[in-house]
Image 1 (cartoon, helix red, strand yellow):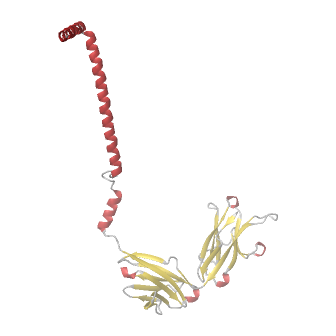
Image 2 (cartoon, helix red, strand yellow):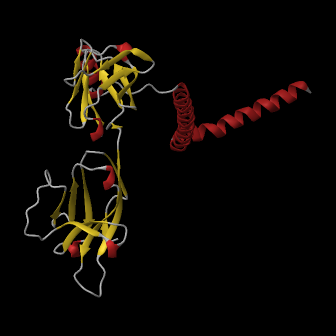
Image 3 (cartoon, one colour):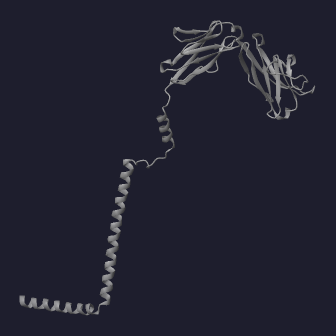
Length: 303
């Protein structure tokens, strides 16, 4: 695609929207425009770049600003009404009768009622939190409510001045399009479902209150996180038994090898000693002669 943007936008009546239309680098110097309609040929132009008239996004109903470095032009629409719902088009004007403009369509839906940016809230015990409930233009003069779900007696309602406050909650209506709810001195039992309301519309919000960390816990947590382990992790019993078995095997093999080497050396030394001693060589025949004589004499005695 040569031009891209979101396919659908939803906005509360009386609110404003601002969104980008991205284009490819080769179209940086071309004229960009924003028009209303579902067909290129019958699209009513609402704003375009390159015009001599200066635009003010904060005041004008519709304005367009082109950033050629980022290859994006931004469209702003203010004070939207339900009648503004419909198809719109981001376009780049090619300027040739033979080539169609590059463009993309988006659908804007303007609704009335309530809205909130985040319906999952959390805060530490003892602290306070503030958030906004947005409403459409037709409810500017209506009273605004804040209640705990399932407990009608907990409802707090703004007065004629658009304000309510007690020791636990404050509700302030700006009379433009939002009212702020401030929850004070949060307690653990404040956890639960609540809702803000205007007219017949009701929007649910969940609050989660958590225990704050003490200074000692914070220091201990940081100490545990940053300190390296002082000792290596203990080895398993299986690993120690395996290492012991290997050590015993090595000792037995070493002992056997030492014994074999000792026997071999002793044998060689004995042979060398016998070969080099002449007295032993002469004594061996004499010893054999004496033994033979003794045997003969024994036989003669017996016969």
